[in-house]
Image 1 (spheres, rainbow, N blue to C red):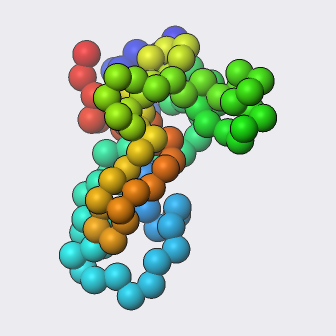
Image 2: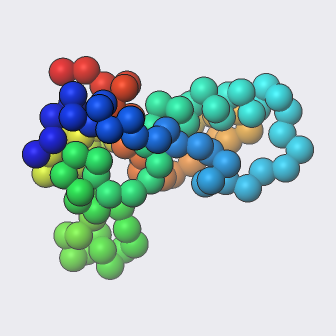
Length: 112
């Protein structure tokens, strides 16, 4: 399994909200708020540490294929296998009141 230092050395991309959302006529303040929030995360996908699928549809969840596990704090969780942290509920980001998408934290945002 990779270490935090291994992941940092990979220089993984940060999440860009423009690849996730379609928005028009945003104010500069809203764009700044979206940039500031999403830069803390990796783009959606498999676990950066162990490669496990994090989310999925109802069937994936029912079959146990989705490995995102809810944590104690509302909206936060982690990978079932390696415990890499993630967030599924994103609240009050510029024009967004609530967005549900599993995004793992970028390695540069984590420490041991």
